[in-house]
Amino acid sequence: MLTVCLESLGLTLCVAGSVLVMAACGMPTWKVSAFIDSNIVVAQTIWDGLWMTCVVQSTGQMQCKVHDSVLALTRDLQTARALTVLSAALGFAALAVTVTGAQCTTCVADSAVKRRVVRAGGIVYAASGLFVLVPLCWIANNIIVDFHDPHVASSKKREIGAAIYTGWAAAALLLLGGAVLCCSCTRTAASGKYAPSTETTCTAECDKKYYV
Image (cartoon, rainbow, N blue to C red; front, side, top):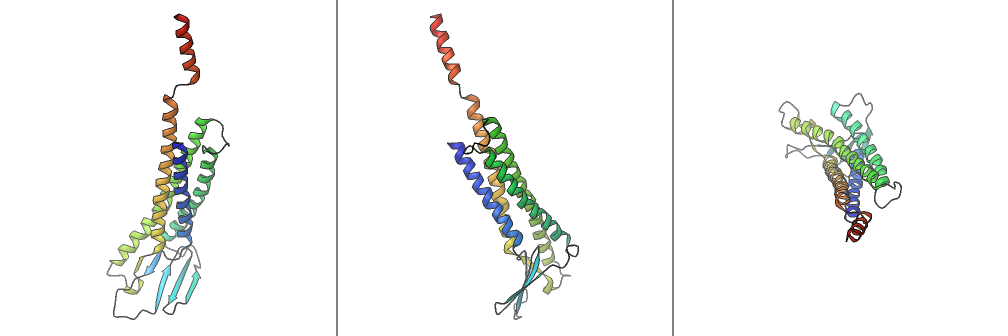
């Protein structure tokens, strides 16, 4: 029962993390324009995402433009595109693997194979979290460095957007959920290792009666 609860908890955390990864991938608010000069009246806000750039007017009107060329993007955005999409794809693969070996399914009959399959799903989920964590930290570091660089114009400085915070939450859920799935397999293995079988107990009792 404890194993089923741990698997359900880990799978729920991982699925939520994968959903947040896809949400962060599509959000245009990876980089948000920074307003350093408070005496200037701001008429528009610029959002930079992996796939498009949006300009939000003070009236609430928003205009978005898809990036013209992938090669024209900076290295951090190109890497973020690839790794974020790969993380989402690994999330789908890990979901299929974990459900196949879960205790509540009958896709695999052998309990030992079930443990290995669930452990593999947990490892894939953890790898998905690491894949999305790398570009998030890279882009966040570049934003902070450019913000404190005096050679960068104030109009080109950016702040960390909501998409990066969403991605960090997704990475935390994926890593935590993957760890819970691996721990559930360890718990099952430990329980099965030291539990005496009914056949062995009956044989011992019969031998005892025979010699008496």
